[in-house]
Image (cartoon, rainbow, N blue to C red):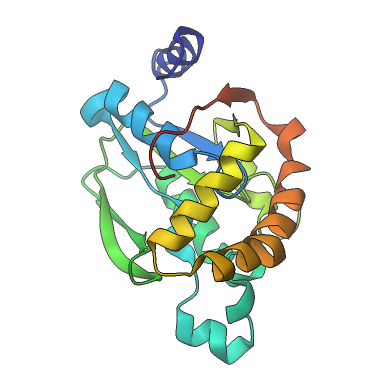
Length: 211
């Protein structure tokens, strides 16, 4: 569960009087970003919606065309410009305008457009992802669009165990999952972890469900 200090932080953002809060949840693969986001949504109720960065995964066919399918999840396997453009729309809600965002489905390993609904009167938009604190273009545009960015702290052994379980749950053998973690997830994780000092808050997460 979320500690009282973290709940007080989100409640303080809500009390700031801003018409909309954009909160970034960032961490390494398997760290528990979705777990924390789900707990925040449960606390905030109907005033919040989650718009994950993962909806901007490039389609598998495009990754194959680009020769990047073997490292899906790396920074250049996302439509980062599209993600930044969506955050700009979400930053300044327009009265009466509904924004539709894509969602990523692990069971098919593909994004689906227009699945997440963000009405104009939603107070909090949570967006979770690996690269919210990157300083490379176009990712560097993300930080300025967020009110705060929270880094997810988790035990490293627990994080890797979570990754292994997730890969196997979605169809990889244990050997294939371990190889993917070693050659794709962990190189990305090292780059992501280097951005942690730029976060506004570090939140400890204990994993008990997929994230």
